[in-house]
Length: 156
Image (cartoon, rainbow, N blue to C red; front, side, top):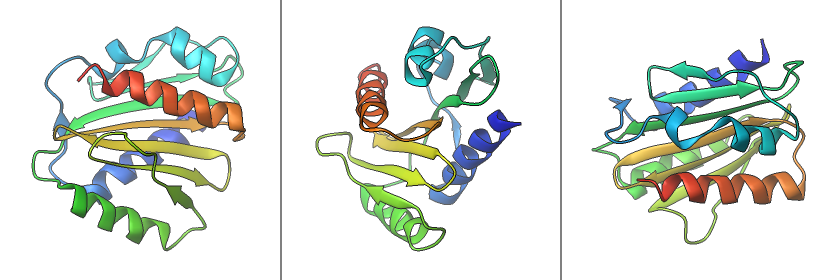
């Protein structure tokens, strides 16, 4: 159930930001987001990955109380300016807080949403790379999410 919540938020962000969204050339999401990385983010062992046709890879902890998902899609027509406009529109409603992380991709947004739904999306070389973690936000989790997305982005 919780996996569906994070996955639907990630999917909604992808749909709102740009279309068409297709699987990115290069490694799949599960290739760049191994289980040990998800386990580190969630602070506990995770189950088997849920592979979403190469564009997404999700994990949940054993009791499904926390989830982590990565999506990677081609966005050949999306510019940094369009990305930022979309982020501003999304931030205007729903109580979400968005911030930009300096030096990460051509554009990015780190989201903290009500209900422990946290994500970071990066536009990099015409790819939208997103990491979503459903878990209570702490300074350590925020730092780990930023480090993880930097490692993932470096693979493209």
